[in-house]
Image 1 (cartoon, rainbow, N blue to C red):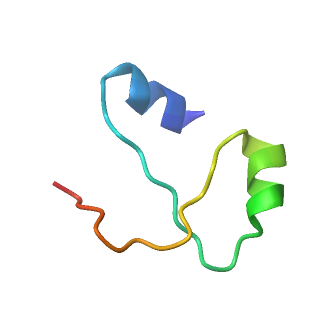
Image 2: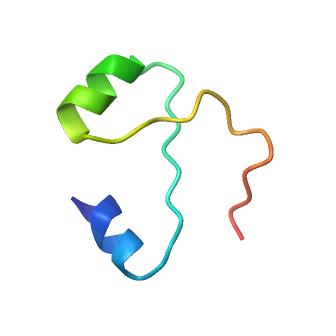
Length: 43
């Protein structure tokens, strides 16, 4: 998964999808999704 590849380079990856069910995201992809994106920076 590309998220794990980015993490190998020391990049902090945040996943946000207001329509996704957190349980399904965790089960399907093994990752946690953010509940909101307040305070997260793209820099």
